[in-house]
Amino acid sequence: MVKARGAAKDDGAAVVYEKQRTERIKENKERLQKLGILELTKKLNTANAPSKKLNTPRHTTLSTDPPRRSFRLKDKPPVSYKERKIPKTEKISTEDVEINIGEGENPEFYTEEHEKLLGDCKNAWVLYADGYDKDGQRIYDPENGKSCHQCRQKTLGQHTECRNCKLVQGQFCGDCLYMRYGENVVEANENANWICPVCRGICNCSRCRREKGYAPTGAVYRKVLRLGYKSVAHYLVKTRLCSDQEDLSSAHSPLAKSIVSIAEFANALSTSQGGERTHFDHDDEYCDQEDVNG
Image (cartoon, rainbow, N blue to C red; front, side, top):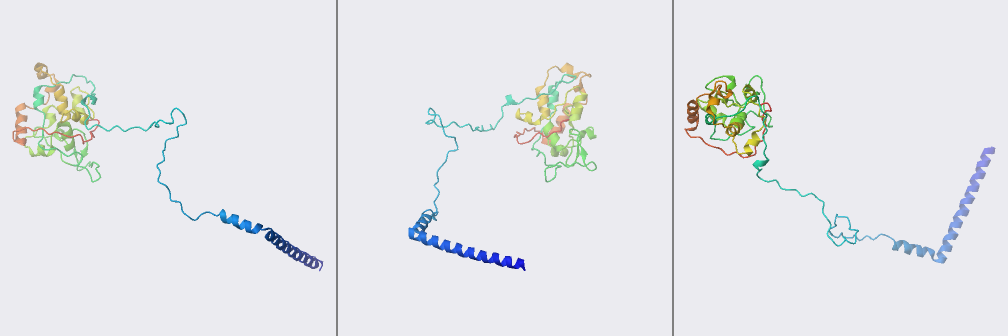
């Protein structure tokens, strides 16, 4: 009972306070109205209100260069430190092409007889197409593929068949035959008397070169093209010609092993090309993707 009376007393006091507060606010507003302060406040708020008019941006070119603070340099044009791109030359100078083939156990040299055994082709071979899938990846097949003597990869695609040895050593894939010897695998297969580079004694795969005491060439096809040679074999033979016939005709010379007669190869070449040797000028669009061992 006592608590109820105390709560009622507190509620009555709050009502009286709110009534007095409201009366004071009313008196203050009337006093401000008489002094003109309310009208002045409205005018100030209207003047400071943001304008609804949109300012159209001006198209001015701003310089990204920092301002010149030096009185001596402020009137001079700013220095540009941007790197200038030097356009690539269409042709690379032959002086910039370096082919470094290590020295083997035996000196490497050839004669005009070996130069006559170099192959040729009437039509250019399209690299990285035969035996590749639609994504440009080479297809390796240990069951249905054939092993290439040069790159020693068992892949699909066309491979040569030597009419002289008729062995696996006479199998070359189209890309290796073209890059390393300048010959077209289609033309070689159409020639009933075609003889492989191994039988001709000009094979430049790493295995044959080591047997002769020579160092492997590595991937040099792209470089020899820039120097103007149609294949790696043409570069090796033509840059290492020797006029000393006695040393090369010796039975102990590594070049004298497994070399077919010039007449036999010339007959095979004339059969495939109608007795006329042709030269094909390559461009430099092919990348050198030879096996590092071959």
